[in-house]
Amino acid sequence: MRQSVRSLLKKKLAKDPLTWLTCYDYSFASALNLTDLDMILVGDSGGMTVLGYTDTVPVTMEEMLVLTKAVRRGAPDKFIVGDMPKGSYEESNRIAIENAMRFVKEAGCDAIKLEGSGMMIERIAAISATGIPVIGHLGLTPQTSSQFGGYRVVGRTSDEATKLRNDAKLIEESGAFALLLEATPPELAREVSESTSIICMGIGAGRQTDGQLLILHDLLGLYPNFRPKFAKCYVPQVIENFTALLDKESQIIQFGKDTRLDGLYQLAVLAVGKFIDEVQSKNFPTEEFTY
Image 1 (cartoon, rainbow, N blue to C red):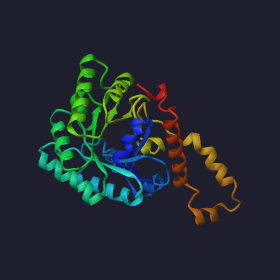
Image 2 (cartoon, helix red, strand yellow):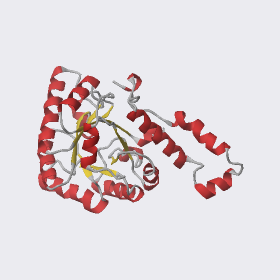
Image 3 (tube, rainbow, N blue to C red):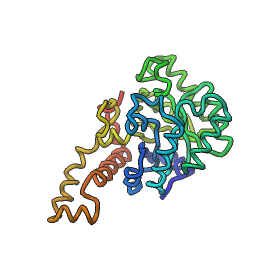
Image 4 (cartoon, one colour):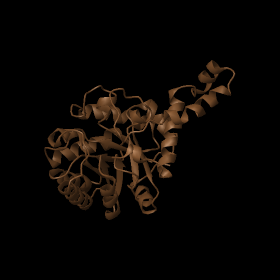
Protein backbone atom coordinates (compact mmCIF):
# COMPACT_ATOMS: atom_id res chain seq x y z
CA MET A 1 0.00 0.00 0.00
CA ARG A 2 1.29 3.45 -0.92
CA GLN A 3 1.82 5.55 2.19
CA SER A 4 0.50 9.09 2.59
CA VAL A 5 1.55 11.95 4.85
CA ARG A 6 -1.32 11.02 7.14
CA SER A 7 -0.45 7.32 7.33
CA LEU A 8 3.22 8.13 7.94
CA LEU A 9 2.32 10.47 10.81
CA LYS A 10 0.08 7.74 12.26
CA LYS A 11 3.08 5.42 12.34
CA LYS A 12 5.02 8.00 14.35
CA LEU A 13 2.17 8.27 16.86
CA ALA A 14 2.00 4.48 17.11
CA LYS A 15 5.81 4.34 17.57
CA ASP A 16 6.00 2.07 14.54
CA PRO A 17 9.49 2.69 13.07
CA LEU A 18 9.53 4.00 9.51
CA THR A 19 11.87 2.69 6.81
CA TRP A 20 13.36 4.86 4.07
CA LEU A 21 15.93 4.14 1.38
CA THR A 22 17.43 6.10 -1.48
CA CYS A 23 17.00 4.89 -5.05
CA TYR A 24 17.95 6.35 -8.42
CA ASP A 25 16.83 4.02 -11.22
CA TYR A 26 14.00 1.88 -12.56
CA SER A 27 15.41 -1.58 -11.85
CA PHE A 28 16.20 -1.07 -8.18
CA ALA A 29 12.97 0.90 -7.72
CA SER A 30 10.99 -2.08 -9.04
CA ALA A 31 12.79 -4.26 -6.48
CA LEU A 32 11.95 -1.83 -3.67
CA ASN A 33 8.35 -1.80 -4.85
CA LEU A 34 8.10 -5.49 -3.87
CA THR A 35 9.07 -4.79 -0.25
CA ASP A 36 7.30 -3.20 2.74
CA LEU A 37 9.53 -0.11 2.57
CA ASP A 38 7.63 3.03 3.62
CA MET A 39 9.42 5.69 1.55
CA ILE A 40 11.95 6.17 -1.24
CA LEU A 41 14.24 9.19 -1.43
CA VAL A 42 15.59 10.05 -4.85
CA GLY A 43 18.59 11.71 -3.25
CA ASP A 44 21.12 14.08 -4.75
CA SER A 45 23.53 11.40 -3.50
CA GLY A 46 22.70 9.83 -6.87
CA GLY A 47 25.15 12.36 -8.25
CA MET A 48 27.87 10.37 -6.51
CA THR A 49 26.59 6.79 -6.65
CA VAL A 50 25.17 6.89 -10.19
CA LEU A 51 26.66 9.88 -12.00
CA GLY A 52 30.17 9.69 -10.55
CA TYR A 53 30.56 13.18 -9.09
CA THR A 54 32.88 13.51 -6.10
CA ASP A 55 30.11 15.12 -4.01
CA THR A 56 26.49 16.23 -4.36
CA VAL A 57 27.14 19.87 -5.29
CA PRO A 58 27.28 19.51 -9.14
CA VAL A 59 23.94 17.70 -9.44
CA THR A 60 21.41 19.63 -11.54
CA MET A 61 17.65 19.85 -11.41
CA GLU A 62 17.39 18.22 -14.83
CA GLU A 63 19.52 15.27 -13.68
CA MET A 64 17.37 14.86 -10.58
CA LEU A 65 14.20 14.82 -12.65
CA VAL A 66 15.56 12.11 -14.95
CA LEU A 67 16.45 9.92 -11.95
CA THR A 68 13.16 10.61 -10.18
CA LYS A 69 10.99 9.81 -13.20
CA ALA A 70 12.76 6.47 -13.54
CA VAL A 71 12.17 5.64 -9.87
CA ARG A 72 8.48 6.54 -10.09
CA ARG A 73 8.06 4.25 -13.10
CA GLY A 74 9.68 1.42 -11.15
CA ALA A 75 7.92 2.01 -7.83
CA PRO A 76 4.33 3.11 -8.49
CA ASP A 77 3.24 1.90 -5.05
CA LYS A 78 5.76 3.83 -2.94
CA PHE A 79 5.81 7.26 -1.32
CA ILE A 80 8.58 9.03 -3.23
CA VAL A 81 10.52 12.08 -2.06
CA GLY A 82 12.45 14.25 -4.49
CA ASP A 83 15.65 15.78 -3.15
CA MET A 84 16.04 19.44 -4.12
CA PRO A 85 19.60 19.79 -5.51
CA LYS A 86 21.92 22.66 -4.65
CA GLY A 87 20.93 25.78 -6.58
CA SER A 88 17.30 24.77 -7.06
CA TYR A 89 15.77 26.57 -4.05
CA GLU A 90 18.20 28.95 -2.32
CA GLU A 91 17.75 32.08 -4.46
CA SER A 92 14.07 32.85 -3.90
CA ASN A 93 10.71 31.45 -2.85
CA ARG A 94 9.52 31.66 -6.45
CA ILE A 95 12.36 29.48 -7.77
CA ALA A 96 11.98 27.06 -4.88
CA ILE A 97 8.26 26.65 -5.58
CA GLU A 98 8.80 26.26 -9.33
CA ASN A 99 11.33 23.47 -8.86
CA ALA A 100 9.31 21.74 -6.15
CA MET A 101 6.34 21.80 -8.53
CA ARG A 102 8.47 20.17 -11.23
CA PHE A 103 9.21 17.25 -8.88
CA VAL A 104 5.48 16.80 -8.28
CA LYS A 105 4.07 17.48 -11.76
CA GLU A 106 6.80 16.02 -13.97
CA ALA A 107 8.20 13.23 -11.81
CA GLY A 108 5.21 12.22 -9.68
CA CYS A 109 6.76 12.90 -6.29
CA ASP A 110 4.68 12.74 -3.12
CA ALA A 111 6.97 15.18 -1.28
CA ILE A 112 10.26 17.06 -1.58
CA LYS A 113 13.24 17.45 0.76
CA LEU A 114 15.58 20.39 1.16
CA GLU A 115 18.59 21.06 3.37
CA GLY A 116 19.35 23.66 5.98
CA SER A 117 17.89 26.32 8.22
CA GLY A 118 18.02 30.12 8.30
CA MET A 119 16.58 31.38 5.00
CA MET A 120 15.64 27.80 4.13
CA ILE A 121 12.88 27.97 6.76
CA GLU A 122 11.19 30.57 4.56
CA ARG A 123 11.57 28.26 1.54
CA ILE A 124 9.96 25.39 3.44
CA ALA A 125 7.03 27.62 4.43
CA ALA A 126 6.56 28.88 0.87
CA ILE A 127 6.59 25.39 -0.67
CA SER A 128 4.33 23.98 2.06
CA ALA A 129 1.85 26.80 1.45
CA THR A 130 1.35 25.51 -2.10
CA GLY A 131 0.22 22.13 -0.76
CA ILE A 132 3.44 20.24 -1.46
CA PRO A 133 4.59 18.14 1.52
CA VAL A 134 8.11 19.11 2.65
CA ILE A 135 10.83 17.31 4.61
CA GLY A 136 13.57 19.39 6.25
CA HIS A 137 17.16 18.25 6.74
CA LEU A 138 19.43 19.21 9.65
CA GLY A 139 22.73 18.04 11.13
CA LEU A 140 25.22 17.17 8.43
CA THR A 141 23.94 18.87 5.27
CA PRO A 142 26.17 17.70 2.41
CA GLN A 143 25.32 20.57 0.04
CA THR A 144 26.84 23.08 2.47
CA SER A 145 29.25 20.84 4.42
CA SER A 146 32.33 22.77 3.25
CA GLN A 147 31.11 25.77 5.25
CA PHE A 148 31.15 23.76 8.46
CA GLY A 149 34.37 21.77 8.27
CA GLY A 150 33.39 19.01 5.86
CA TYR A 151 31.54 15.77 6.56
CA ARG A 152 31.35 15.52 10.35
CA VAL A 153 28.98 14.90 13.24
CA VAL A 154 26.91 18.00 14.03
CA GLY A 155 25.54 18.72 17.51
CA ARG A 156 28.34 17.63 19.81
CA THR A 157 28.97 21.12 21.21
CA SER A 158 26.45 22.96 23.37
CA ASP A 159 26.04 25.75 20.81
CA GLU A 160 25.47 23.33 17.93
CA ALA A 161 22.98 21.29 19.94
CA THR A 162 21.01 24.40 20.91
CA LYS A 163 20.92 25.61 17.32
CA LEU A 164 19.76 22.24 16.04
CA ARG A 165 16.93 22.11 18.62
CA ASN A 166 15.81 25.61 17.68
CA ASP A 167 16.05 24.94 13.95
CA ALA A 168 13.99 21.75 14.33
CA LYS A 169 11.24 23.71 16.04
CA LEU A 170 11.31 26.36 13.29
CA ILE A 171 11.07 23.68 10.61
CA GLU A 172 8.08 22.19 12.40
CA GLU A 173 6.42 25.62 12.62
CA SER A 174 7.13 26.31 8.94
CA GLY A 175 4.77 23.53 7.86
CA ALA A 176 7.14 20.65 7.14
CA PHE A 177 5.66 17.25 7.95
CA ALA A 178 9.02 15.55 8.56
CA LEU A 179 12.67 16.19 9.35
CA LEU A 180 15.81 14.21 8.51
CA LEU A 181 18.61 14.32 11.09
CA GLU A 182 21.97 13.31 9.62
CA ALA A 183 25.16 12.52 11.59
CA THR A 184 23.69 13.74 14.87
CA PRO A 185 24.47 12.50 18.41
CA PRO A 186 21.85 9.91 19.39
CA GLU A 187 20.68 11.64 22.56
CA LEU A 188 20.14 14.90 20.73
CA ALA A 189 18.27 13.10 17.94
CA ARG A 190 16.08 11.37 20.53
CA GLU A 191 15.32 14.67 22.22
CA VAL A 192 14.32 16.31 18.94
CA SER A 193 12.19 13.33 17.92
CA GLU A 194 10.31 13.34 21.22
CA SER A 195 9.80 17.11 21.35
CA THR A 196 8.29 17.61 17.89
CA SER A 197 4.99 16.50 16.41
CA ILE A 198 6.51 15.96 12.97
CA ILE A 199 8.27 12.79 11.85
CA CYS A 200 12.00 12.72 12.66
CA MET A 201 13.97 10.31 10.51
CA GLY A 202 17.60 9.51 11.18
CA ILE A 203 20.67 8.63 9.16
CA GLY A 204 23.64 8.27 11.46
CA ALA A 205 21.52 9.63 14.33
CA GLY A 206 21.01 6.55 16.50
CA ARG A 207 18.00 4.28 16.80
CA GLN A 208 15.65 6.52 18.82
CA THR A 209 14.29 8.53 15.91
CA ASP A 210 10.96 7.75 14.26
CA GLY A 211 12.67 5.78 11.51
CA GLN A 212 15.85 5.16 9.56
CA LEU A 213 17.23 6.19 6.17
CA LEU A 214 20.11 4.46 4.38
CA ILE A 215 21.74 4.91 1.00
CA LEU A 216 20.76 1.90 -1.12
CA HIS A 217 24.27 1.60 -2.56
CA ASP A 218 25.68 1.33 0.97
CA LEU A 219 23.07 -1.25 1.97
CA LEU A 220 24.04 -3.36 -1.06
CA GLY A 221 27.77 -2.63 -0.97
CA LEU A 222 27.65 -1.06 -4.43
CA TYR A 223 29.57 2.18 -3.85
CA PRO A 224 33.35 1.55 -3.89
CA ASN A 225 34.70 4.97 -2.86
CA PHE A 226 33.83 4.99 0.86
CA ARG A 227 31.22 3.90 3.38
CA PRO A 228 30.14 6.08 6.34
CA LYS A 229 30.31 4.70 9.87
CA PHE A 230 26.51 4.59 10.12
CA ALA A 231 26.03 2.61 6.89
CA LYS A 232 25.49 -1.15 7.02
CA CYS A 233 25.81 -3.58 4.12
CA TYR A 234 23.10 -6.23 4.45
CA VAL A 235 24.27 -8.60 1.72
CA PRO A 236 26.34 -10.86 4.05
CA GLN A 237 23.24 -11.47 6.20
CA VAL A 238 21.08 -12.68 3.32
CA ILE A 239 23.57 -14.41 1.04
CA GLU A 240 22.82 -17.84 2.55
CA ASN A 241 19.09 -17.38 1.90
CA PHE A 242 19.90 -16.38 -1.67
CA THR A 243 22.13 -19.38 -2.32
CA ALA A 244 19.58 -21.68 -0.67
CA LEU A 245 17.01 -20.41 -3.18
CA LEU A 246 19.32 -21.30 -6.06
CA ASP A 247 20.29 -24.66 -4.55
CA LYS A 248 16.69 -25.79 -4.89
CA GLU A 249 16.86 -25.42 -8.65
CA SER A 250 18.45 -28.10 -10.82
CA GLN A 251 18.39 -25.90 -13.93
CA ILE A 252 19.76 -22.54 -12.77
CA ILE A 253 20.00 -21.02 -16.24
CA GLN A 254 16.38 -21.87 -17.08
CA PHE A 255 15.26 -20.76 -13.62
CA GLY A 256 16.88 -17.39 -14.24
CA LYS A 257 15.26 -17.02 -17.65
CA ASP A 258 11.84 -17.91 -16.25
CA THR A 259 11.92 -15.84 -13.06
CA ARG A 260 14.87 -13.37 -13.11
CA LEU A 261 15.40 -14.31 -9.46
CA ASP A 262 18.94 -15.63 -9.92
CA GLY A 263 20.87 -12.37 -9.54
CA LEU A 264 21.23 -8.95 -7.94
CA TYR A 265 17.52 -8.10 -8.23
CA GLN A 266 16.47 -10.87 -5.84
CA LEU A 267 19.50 -10.27 -3.62
CA ALA A 268 18.42 -6.63 -3.30
CA VAL A 269 14.89 -7.63 -2.33
CA LEU A 270 16.25 -9.92 0.40
CA ALA A 271 18.75 -7.35 1.71
CA VAL A 272 16.13 -4.59 1.85
CA GLY A 273 13.75 -6.95 3.62
CA LYS A 274 16.42 -7.60 6.25
CA PHE A 275 16.97 -3.85 6.72
CA ILE A 276 13.22 -3.36 7.21
CA ASP A 277 13.07 -6.19 9.77
CA GLU A 278 15.98 -4.78 11.78
CA VAL A 279 14.61 -1.23 11.82
CA GLN A 280 11.13 -2.35 12.83
CA SER A 281 12.52 -4.55 15.61
CA LYS A 282 14.83 -1.68 16.66
CA ASN A 283 17.92 -3.79 16.06
CA PHE A 284 19.38 -1.19 13.70
CA PRO A 285 21.38 0.89 14.18
CA THR A 286 23.48 -0.72 16.89
CA GLU A 287 26.37 1.15 18.56
CA GLU A 288 28.64 -0.18 15.85
CA PHE A 289 26.79 2.00 13.36
CA THR A 290 26.23 5.01 15.64
CA TYR A 291 28.37 8.07 16.34
